[in-house]
Image 1: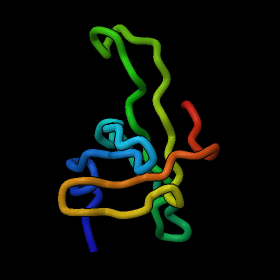
Image 2 (image 1 turned 120 degrees about the vertical axis):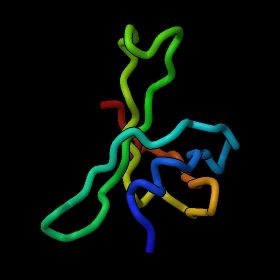
Image 3 (image 1 turned 90 degrees about the vertical axis):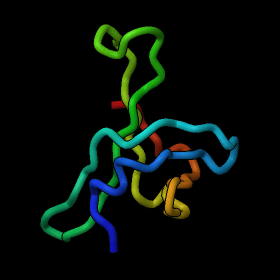
Length: 83
């Protein structure tokens, strides 16, 4: 078992490319079912995030392949959307 705050401290890595996608900035929880539906990562920015209009990425929970001590491995596919 882990806390949601523990998830936010881990780097998110795409298993196909090995690219670091960033850290989780928000977590979507389904309170009726008591489970995590997905999480949001910051979109790529140029310069200060405060002034950026880039959209964040929504990663559905089923894309998570492994949660390690330091990283979360995900398999990006067509389910990833911009929010």
